[in-house]
Each structure stands twice: as structure tokens, then as C-alpha cells.
Amino acid sequence: MPRVVEQIQRAELWHRNTFLATATAAGTGWTYARHPTEIKRPADGRAPFVKEITCPTCGDRLRFRVHSVASTRRRQRLFRALAWTSLGLIVAGVGGVVAMWTTDSFNGVLLFLGLTAIVVGLGAGPSLGSMAADDMGITGHGASNPGAVKHPLQVTEPERPGD
Ligand SMILES: [Zn+2]
Image 1 (spheres, protein in one colour):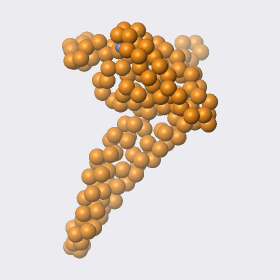
Image 2 (spheres, rainbow, N blue to C red; image 1 turned 120 degrees about the horizontal axis):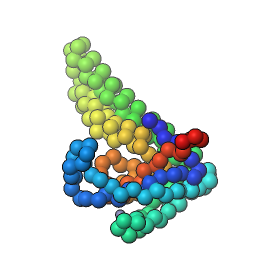
Image 3 (tube, rainbow, N blue to C red; image 1 turned 90 degrees about the vertical axis):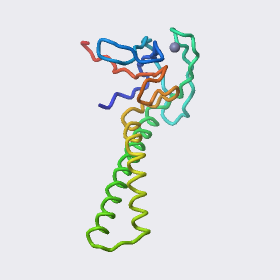
Image 4 (cartoon, rainbow, N blue to C red; image 1 turned 45 degrees about the vertical axis):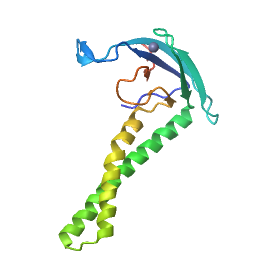
């Protein structure tokens, strides 16, 4: 679900408590210490800047690159377009290979291009789709990556009136 991109972004800096996954109430996984923070984005049209946050748990000084609201939305559109392009490559590659197969018109160059399109699409598509879904214009230390990074920065939904 898309999250709200705001000028003043509420977020949490997470500190992974253990290196290895451990048993938790929800199954095997990692536990995190969560530290609320607030990040003010640059104005639209301004260059991204680096915000340094010190982790209250371990004292590590972390530097995140913060993009403006407009730049973040452009990044999300770009990643979505690239993810759809990857899907298009897969469809075109499979279609081309199937067309050659069914019409018995073998062409080595077209077969190579079709298989290459399939491999590139399958290789890049999932990562680009994940980036399109997760990128919030705050990068660094794996903030946009799925998985158990040590210091993910999680954007939190703003509180709605009445919450
Ligand atoms: Zn830490």
C-alpha cells in the first residue's frame, strides 16, 4: 500500500537487536528497538541533502539522503515504469520465443534476444517492483531495501484526526 509522502515525514529509526534471527512470538525473525524521528524534506526543486541521525541504541551515526516530495514521487514513478518495462520484456520475450516455436521459423538472433529479454525481465523486475513499492525518498543504510538490515528507516503513516 502506498504510504503518504510529506514535507515533514514522520519515521522510525529501527535498530536490529540481534545479528541472527531468533524465535519471536510471531515466529522466527528479528526484533528491533524503534526510535521515532521526524525528517524535514528539502523544498521541491531543491537538491537532496544528507541528514545524520545517531542511533540511540548503539550510538552509530547514520547518514541518510533525503529527497523532496516531488523528487520522491518522480523516483517512485521511475521505478514503477522500469518495473512495468521489465514485465513488458518478459511478455515480449516469451511471445517471441513462442511465435518462433509455433511457426517453426527459427532465427538464432531473435531467439537470443527473446531469451535475453526474459532473463533481464525476470532478473530486474522483482527488484524494481520492490523499489517502486518501498522507496520513500530517504535512502541509505538499506532504508529502501527489503530484508533485515541493521538500521532500516521506516516511514510511518501520519496520524489522522481522531486517532
Ligand atoms: Zn543502532
